[in-house]
Length: 106
Image 1 (cartoon, one colour):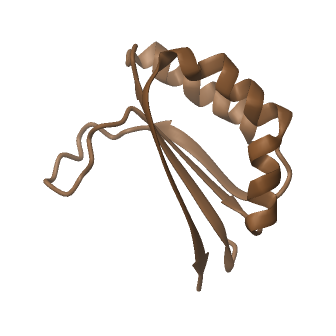
Image 2 (spheres, helix red, strand yellow):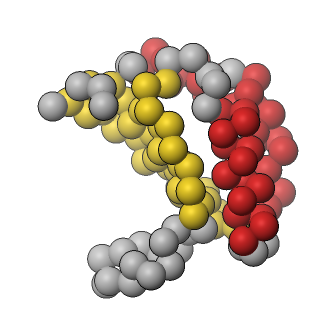
């Protein structure tokens, strides 16, 4: 795990939230986003429906977690053709998208 950088967490609520649609979005994350330079950690997956404590946000279907080496790498990612293609290919099935960006250090 990197010692510092920028965390980019994205939570997708889907129109079609079937297991197949969730997996399609996850596969697209790995295919189009994971190869973009400047990423030090990457993960995408479905919400664990068994975690239902009052503090658990349950208004999303797929979570994406990307750690960048720095803010500059994040900025390159935002304009990268793979990121643009990911959005164009998947946005028709997005009911809502929430993005949380923040630095981290340890």
